[in-house]
Length: 213
Length: 162
Image (cartoon, rainbow over all chains, first blue to last red):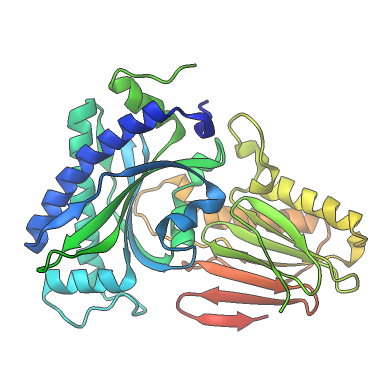
């Protein structure tokens, strides 16, 4: 078993590169969908203790709309696409042309949630196919599921498998930004990849740099 | 206003008046409060998994599992002068945040956590005074050892005190 808290910086750099390839592909897909320039930052790869995981996205109780997918295949894991609620509403309004969509409504508008699901699906698909090409690993997303809730409550759901092996998660976090007309940048959300403990070594092995020990 | 003792994910702690004790963003996790109205010392645990047999390897974080967390909390409380027979419990959490069509066992972790917590408390003969479990909403909880009141906040239903 790998002790994530002691993982070397060189491995994190490799994972950042892997994330970068996936994110680039997903950004292109998103830009085409919205007909706007969507940038994704070079992902931050961090080893985060569970206790602090909520702080990675605007505080533990910040309310987000999230699409969750499981990764199946050679290197299982979890994937989240998260937007602050107001951004999710704006985003899906643009996409569907329906200005009444509001993700803080309860129960969720069916049209709105299926549109967001579809976005999550396309993003995850393009991210994973880039990753697959690069690593030659077979990676498939499950059908997505959606929730609007507190960040920590949502993320903790993706930590179940990881938590059996330790108290740290390796988080590949990509910030999604939109460029406004005046060239200012506004942050839209996050794209998280949480590989299962054994998957980490499989990804690194596929790239020819297995972890020591 | 007293200090707020924070309990993280897979963590436990105790509080004494005027302190309150709080944990944020319970999803499939369960928050367990053990309290004694006479001594006014309360403990809270934020567990992630039903049982320590789920652990795969390495050092065990006992606060992560329902069985070990409740045991440890009982030990700590008894050192604080809490009598075992007076201990009562309030529990919250164990939601199923996402609904998947796939039959993945991990998706049912919330209900399994709740089941495990109830079984362990029953075995220890600790009465559950209040429970707000299941459903599909995340919860933030804060307990006041002085009054024995639990505040539960959800995104859609606002704040309730029980």
